[in-house]
Amino acid sequence: MAIQPPHVEDTSAMPAGGINAPQTSVIPKLRTRDLNFYYGSFQALHNIGIDIASRKITAFIGPSGCGKSTFLRTMNRMNETVRGTRYDGQILLDGEDIRKMDVTGVRRRVGMVFQKSNPFPKTIFENVAYGLRINGAKKATIAETVQRSLERAALWTEIKDKLHKPASALSGGQQQRLCIARALAVEPEVLLLDEPCSALDPVATLKIEELLFQIKETTTIVIVTHNMQQAARLADHTGFFLMGKLIEFNDTRAIFQNPKKKETEDYVTGRFG
Image (cartoon, rainbow, N blue to C red; front, side):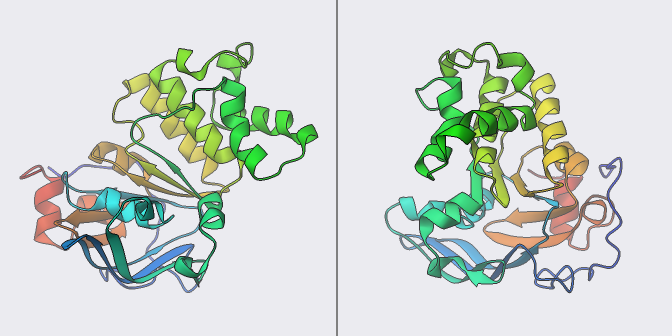
């Protein structure tokens, strides 16, 4: 039986079926065209073309090793930190090729939260303030921004009396929300999340999902998840990856209830994966 998402916004105006078709007549927030990515001689991504809509949640699903996380990391040039990698094709942010942009500027506009929470060995306050300081924020505004970011990450009420304690003292779920707050502090236009809930309990997962629903009003969100129920709950649009290829991309209800590709149907109905 296919997974039944509780509610997905009507996107019937979006062209159906075409992986490479634009979702709307408006320039998408992120767009890739003919994207191929390589680790040395190994080709990890094959001819990926996709439009990611602004201020929506886009999810990528698929089995382990299918290219989801690699694709996510290309969108803020994070893969450039790995020696021997390269790509051809285009990755566009608001219509501009990110390869022609300053890499620091790209990563400020396109923030990332990793699968394993990675708070810095600093206090809770300094974790959130870090990006503000290196981006030259005025000292007078830092405390206010830190509080606002922690509030947006649904963490302020839990830790407001512990701001100067080590971030390592927080629980796993709190550490992940702290990393989200750190990313939000510099007000990114896009937030990439690579399986942010994979190591969390259901209560912590619910808090992060509620947070993502709230921040999508101002931020474009792209999430990689192995949890298909999570994709069904959260995402406006969902893409299915298999062996480095984007097999199908559509609105979430269509992916889970009426997939056009047999590979997608087999995956979402549990025949493999």
